Image (cartoon, rainbow, N blue to C red; front, side):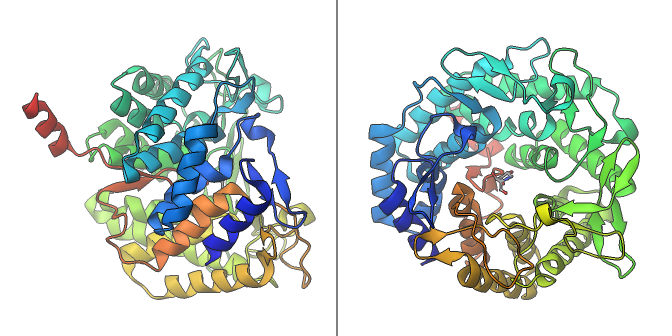
Length: 453
Ligand code: DMJ
């Protein structure tokens, strides 16, 4: 019903545009997608499919067939377009088998290739998909590319090569690994900024939240998606987690585990909502950890889940802030006004879903249900769902945006949290960072294909 409310209102007021403004009941366009249109439709396709909303999936498919157009003069974010559009199209293809999604995913993948035309092959953050000219965010340390952006292309690009028969996509992302492996890492940590021309790190900021987050996620998932054959991805992931534990993970005085940020050797005792995805990641990676560490990685996941739940529970609205701190006498509470907002993000619910699947401890469903009740009470409006400006206030001030990731991630993870484990089972699917399921490329299937030839 939540999905239906979000979708129906998008359809009524913003059909074909990127996102919905649920209060003003009109379209919302973010410059992340340039003038590519239809972000909510592409992001929502697989959620509609999984929830068996057949009519809606059909109309979304028709829109993609007739209207999704990449021949536009647009400067886009390579990362955002990859995780939402390429990821969304790939999942829709694998779930439904409809050829149009495969074709569009490969067409868009080809449009993204000029982003890699840099001296090192580390891609630009921004690309004009008509001219092929790229550049970086002007605010990013001395012209650097961002770890979480260029490090979050791997899963989709491996599948693009798999589906197109063209190795170029896989080559581009394997080269990113090569560049990273050549570099010295301060204390074994990966700084968020890397200059694509010099191949040197920019500022030594390290974060498992914004600017770093999904790079780590994709190392683990690259290994899982390869049916555990990608040993390089595996090693990079477990080495990184080791360094994160030593240098960033801390316990508050009342015993809450949190992941701090690292700025040139100094810790900032702040954790972002984005960082909360890491609970699920640690738990998902527990199985591949050295045998004596398996239980520890699950425990770490559980502790992060508990801390993030506290960050929700300590607000008036029972929805978590954008960032919360562990200093100046507070624990898991936002202290700055500009960190008190909630924009329908999924990461805490994502972690509940992984923890539920991997432990079956009923508290994760209870916590998920608390989030559902809070979303219904504070974010649901006549025209859809809206973010909130201050979750510590008793009265809602709505930000008037229904983010496309609310449909692709937040609602999908909630649905999976309350479904049986055999719906998109982890043995066969990995979720990209926008919650788009991509199939594990099983060794046996490849052998079968080879034998057929
Ligand atoms: C999504 O686009 C993805 O989950 C990304 O990895 C981080 N930000 C948003 C959701 O918060």
